View 1 (tube, rainbow, N blue to C red):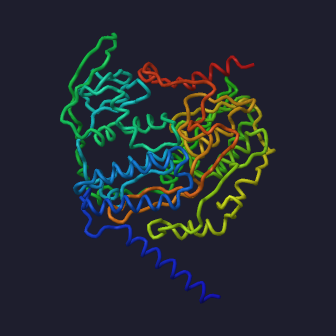
View 2 (tube, rainbow, N blue to C red; view 1 turned 60 degrees about the vertical axis):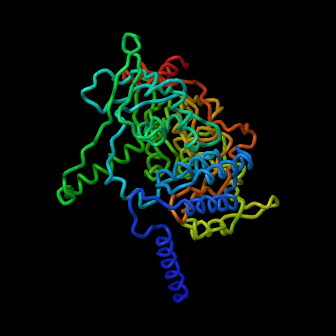
View 3 (cartoon, rainbow, N blue to C red; view 1 turned 180 degrees about the vertical axis):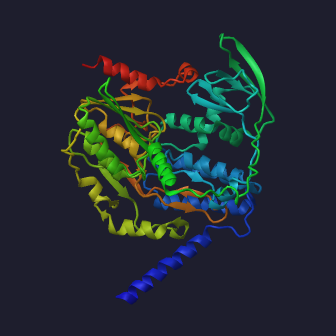
Length: 495
């Protein structure tokens, strides 16, 4: 028995080293070029892998339209391309699937070396939504015209619509929830602008000044100076108490609870459902809410991109009014993982698919535990007061699942904007990487199609708020949170 265990252990170690060797380019140079024929072969292989393994490839698009994207990209590769250039082409294909969990990332080698290469940057931080573009920050300290809240009407003659519609085809999202795409662009406007339009020397910015007049200014790129501190000098020995405070601070960035007795309200901010010691946090939070006899709970999910489904379940048990399951359907189309040498970590996913699923009459492999198990509610410190859930475009995956399962409950009001995550369902649960052999780009491959509630409309939308509160240039200028202000007004008027 011991001998078998040792053999199994060495097989796993061997596979791990083999896997690593397949995901690296010998003598790698940052953003190097690859031969056109090899990149075409990467695209053809990617198509085969997706067709064999992806459970909802044609959920929101037709096979003909997706095939057309593949053909367009293959035909467009007429010369060698850099990794950045090739990534754009692959991202164009992948966004056509309309699955937010199927996305493209640079190779690991690219990411390891990227911090060494500092390029001139677009000088403004910008918030974009629908027909609006507003300054969030200005890297050029000498420019006093473009302050936070300033409305921009065009950049180098390109309108807001031209800019966003040029960026959208390269961003993956669930269905047609474009609010997520606006958030992604806002999160790194300069990066997306350079990626799509190239690095420009100067920028002619048309804007509206504080008096409502149309104005124009010319901005140059911002260049960040390289850090001159040596690696040796940057090493600082921290005493255990300081290290502990840093860890606490990092956790507080992921989850926090504050109490306002004047409103009889608790404000819970959750930026993740991932690793943040959430089980303990929820237990302590609802104990504090119960102890203070609070009537209102605000759960802020605007920055929450999802994480572990188990954590979403733990929170739901404290606030749902009926038992619940994860989804009506949680299914994969295969157990074998075709082309598994390109899927990492393949061995782990294979084990999960073969030991945690059951083949049903439809020919697919179902996670019966997720479909059939209904979770009981917490009886101790269960919250029965009014719940306000704050959502936005970044509310994704497990966070949008939580918003969706709570929507329509008699004591729940969702405030803000449409979630980026789908209301009907998504493709997720287990998400290894496809690593294509030439460029080593990483394409996320979700293995399970999840229909959260079959009675919901399959229209490609996110969870819609009960009270819509869009972004505002005035709110940005005054640095106020209009969504939380809206909730306070609801609490004042709610008997």
